Image (tube, rainbow, N blue to C red; front, side, top):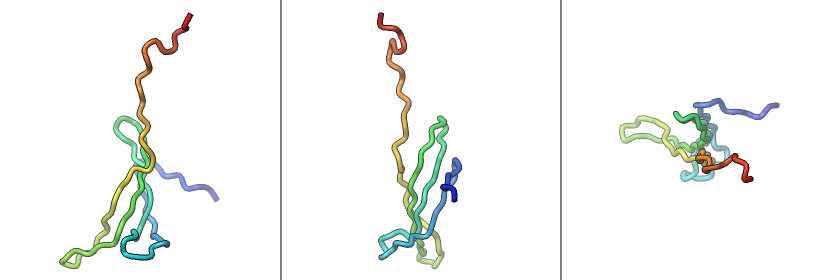
Length: 84
């Protein structure tokens, strides 16, 4: 069986089988987003089942970056030149 590889600009939520009380999310998952500059970042998603005062059911939650975005630093002046 192969390991799941998310496709860019998609997200997935799964039921939380470890939920013990109402503070634990009903769902959790990940999102893989490609930013306009071409960098990618993976995000952790957590979601809860909610109900409005007018009895409308919906899902709400949080998005948190899973791994820091890699920044491209400018190459130092003189990099790549021979020192002699």
